[in-house]
Image (cartoon, rainbow, N blue to C red; front, side, top):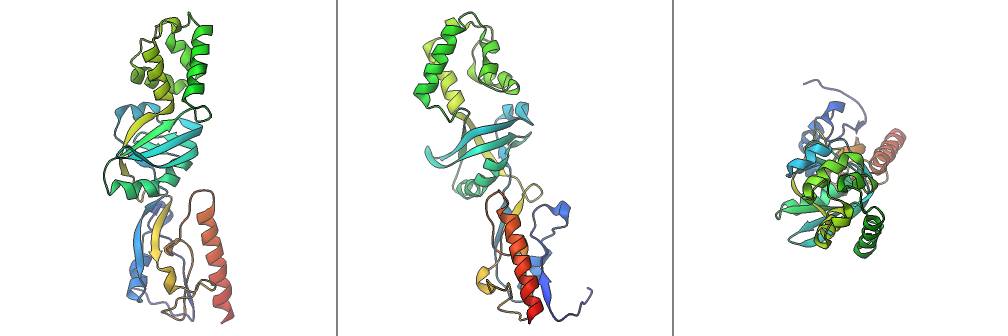
Length: 262
């Protein structure tokens, strides 16, 4: 209830994401009272929850150079390539965070499936040929002892469970159907999305003050003459990679520069 008097105000209070940093979302109610429009706010760049229980066994495992493919009703809706991370509740990491906005939109219409391609550099035919060569060259090796050549050690137990192949089965005796099952697990490891995690784990907030009500050069409000905006409170967001930080720096610089000039 404190009243602050000033000639100019720059509102740079962040969104609702990452509340541990002090972002409470109070700024949205302030600007609404001042006559501004706030576009639908929601957590963005956020980890996702997964239904399958085996996901917990992979907690903390980071995978590089993999691809995630996103499906709904059997149709591929999106894909990302890069680095991802398994958590106790599901998936995180750069490519998952980037895809979370699309996943959130799809969840409104029904179930969403994710497939992880652990070997995106090889198509099905190439990978199958590699498996056949490996099996022939390691005929007497147990299946469980071969898997570390394909996967991180932490994934071996989960992969064995999903493949339903006897861990002690010699590679020479793995059938064509079993090899086909291994192939699909490597290229299409399926899991079911249950939810997007909330603001506590979101990197940013999507939505905010309508950009139509802000001068794009000066960041000055078109409704309240001595009010300027900077950062996440504005309806601007981008993918991971520093874009959202750049939005904050650039709008902050503009607001600071132009509010001082007038």
